[in-house]
Image (cartoon, rainbow, N blue to C red; front, side, top):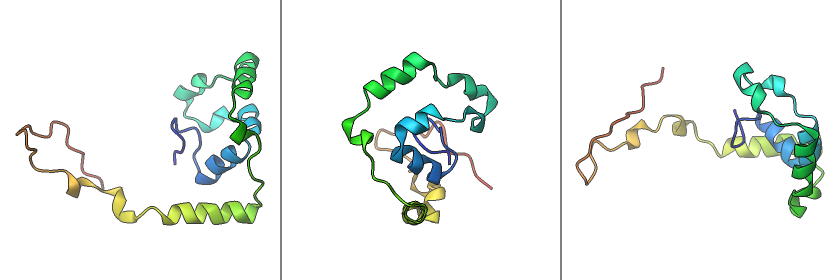
Length: 111
């Protein structure tokens, strides 16, 4: 993790379960899983929740029902798509570019 565009979920399983029940997930979101400085960014006022539910895609209103075993299989499948070699992509940063400009912000070394 974190997962989703805003880092709302710390586990892949939680992100999948959110997609399987977006309304329930929205109504029961636990902001304590966020770092304290981000908890105030959660907009869970009744009017906002109502607007989100009203504008929810019809495709999301009836997601498939998966068993715990099926969710675990989906998590395992998605994790299999991520190669450990993708954790460090510095080898793909060019030493120079056609314009001659240098890389201003090189990626810091990781331990």
